[in-house]
Image (cartoon, rainbow over all chains, first blue to last red; front, side, top):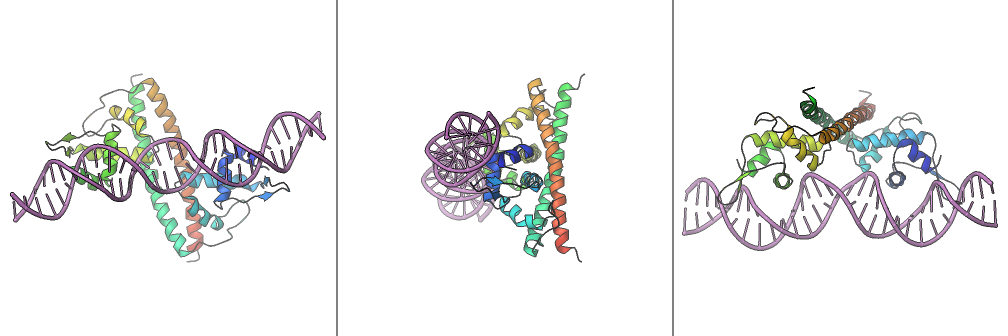
Length: 120
Length: 120
DNA sequence: GTAGAAGTTGACATCAGTGTCAGGTTCAGT
DNA sequence: ACTGAACCTGACACTGATGTCAACTTCTAC
């Protein structure tokens, strides 16, 4: 599929998809004229990338771990180095703390929302 | 307490604390010489602010909802307007989705980490 | 073959919280 | 009173994913 369709199906902008490619997160075949041509599996991959971005990982780290991930194309093609594992473990801890924070913030929001509509 | 101690106790930089004040998120008494003087309750408030920042809320929205929050100083001093409630409800939904994303990302990280140290 | 939609690259803008530096003032302990 | 630590304001830089615009090319349907 071409970039427009991929953008539409993933909800990620065309601009971002090109950026992902520039960062080595996503590859694409090219037509004779130079247009990008994506396989079906790109949809899953882009969604995965978006999730990792949302989790606060940098494109550089995502690029490092992508080959170690199991995806629609099959098993991981590489095994994380100890250095990377350390890094990812730290990220995991950060994400864990972030989730805790988010849940607390959600509770705070609920409290304010409830207080406003609470009388009813 | 003064700004240095507050920074240390909250883990937030002095720079950020001044920024919070500039954004109307935090107030401080001043000594004769102009130094900021914070009450004990500032510690909780700063931590709350940090959590909301971590949840992706802008300083403007935090400023709007802060007076509606119950904190160490007691009950809320204001009730959220319907407009604000709508806004916060949308934020709540966003945070919910974000938490889902984060948990999925955490699982992906675990997978990569496990694959690397898995044999053992 | 032609028109219009969709694609290409490249460059610059944005946002918002935070880091950092400069030049000056205040505070606290001796 | 003096000194060093801590604080003050103001300004500028950065980060990094994304938006946007320009000038051009390719694709597709008629």
